[in-house]
Length: 585
Ligand code: ARG
Image 1 (tube, rainbow, N blue to C red):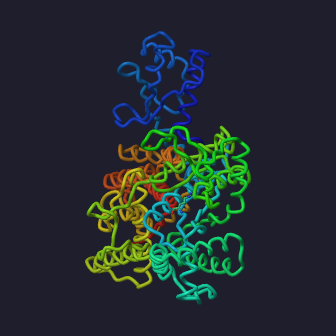
Image 2: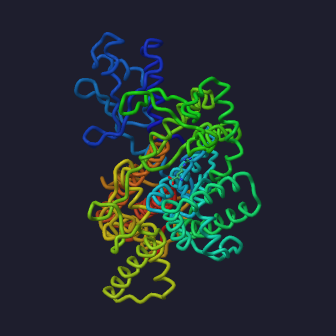
Image 3: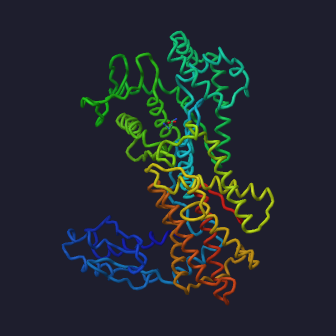
């Protein structure tokens, strides 16, 4: 069934049409959940915005809407408040029947979209031979969450890893390794990413200091790009070695991605330039081929060029993205393109898409968006570093989170006098540690910088993964204690609401749909985190107030059903964030 909000919206649309006809066609009824229960559950504010069009006062407009509104199955009789707000309070029967219908439904009553998009989410996208850093971690976690939400909604999603696997870094690296460590270019397992990163650093240093080396590196790039088999083989081996390390991170984070790096688009680059030339947009400027951008100027106020081919014939990051956007629309049939990178790349994408639009590669109806995010900072507010001042390796960061989760757990077990198997401890520590890292990132508004703090993310209090996991565990504990199989509650269990905390919980449970829609539209995962956090709080309030196992029938079954729905909602919501749950912790 559509969400309550959608239901209300369509009823109001009908009423608006019946009351005012053509003159208000296409008006959004402006319905939103209230933030104060005094005003009911939802509020419709449309009357205020129609005064000009209808040349009437808002209260009279609201009254006319109500005369045509058929909403008795959903709400108590609506009330007009203040200048012309229409306050809506959901009927208990509506809440009860919708919730009862969701029992046993793995989608919790949320239907897949009738209009699936072909969506591409470009995320993670680290660079070969360079370490995957915390920025890539953010992209990975946020991009995966967005992909999961769109998949759940029934869209056809392609998750692309646009790895930086092409370009000048390989010239230096291959030249350097050929001299110092030739095995790395012929044997598959000779290096791990740590070595590779170090070699890259040294190669770069040589490149900057030694002219002969610089020359050799440039020739090496040309050989690679012209398909020389030895260079190609060396390149493949280097990519393979980076890939192993990336995969290790993806496995730990439970991330699925299709690798389609920059090299994939390499054969398409000459056509990009040729077609731009044909379109008349291309200008030659000091030997470089470029397109002058609209609305982008340099310090002197002159129009800024987007260079698509350098004077030496080489192509740029932007050329590859032009080829990619075109390929994704023309060959992959995507109508929604989402790019998840740090905010620093906003201009890059704006420029590439402007050119692609002007040349006709992005038709009007295609939605192309950049999903930017802020920096990850240490607790000192500066760039995240290790104690010795180096960049933090992702592998170490995840290990540290799991280790701390394990220490916390062992302390708690000791305090509670519990003894658990080493397997249990390891499993709980790993889920809590990884969930905590993901949740800490997702629960922030992604556009702001975020402070990375193990202590905060692992705390059992506040808007954290452990708090959420604990609420889930608490509910599983109720079923264990009462020997209840929630799965068996099924169709017979009828929910009937009595206590105020039950109503609050019930209404919140029915808003999952709206929370998910919100994330899919605005691409802000923190909305779902906030929803789940409030759900846990509302559940705890209910559980503190209402006996469950000790209640008399029919309250007992109804409350067990509420517990079960809360657990299922938490589990589904957390899974859309990419988090696992635990039955005990
Ligand atoms: N490799 C790039 C980086 O590390 C991110 C690529 C993002 N995707 C894209 N299509 N440009 O910054």
